[in-house]
Length: 127
Image 1: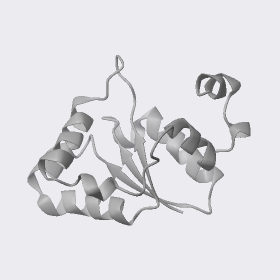
Image 2: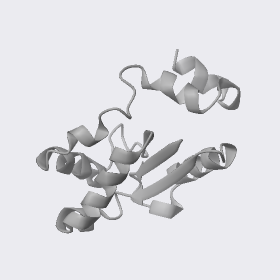
Image 3: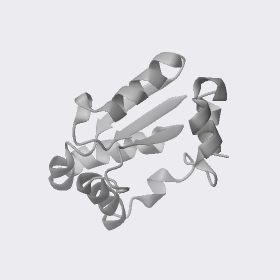
């Protein structure tokens, strides 16, 4: 499976959120992961159409898209929100069609990560 990771942590490679995704990548080496540091590179994505297009093209070719982000006060960071706005401003919503679960995203997580690898606390909050 080809997975595109849209990393929304302002800390980028140093963020704990990305470390969790790297852990999943190590547990499932049969899948390929491609990472984009969205929050750290938002200014570039706003100004450089080729850089934005690279992300969108990767999303279109992916089997799955993992929106990776920390929650700060129950909100995503401003840079990640800006990326979501760019998707709509540039009419690129269709790039995400077909590789996102239609309903119940927590059930989709279970398809990638078997419930035995998830803590009981997380598993019970998703039911």
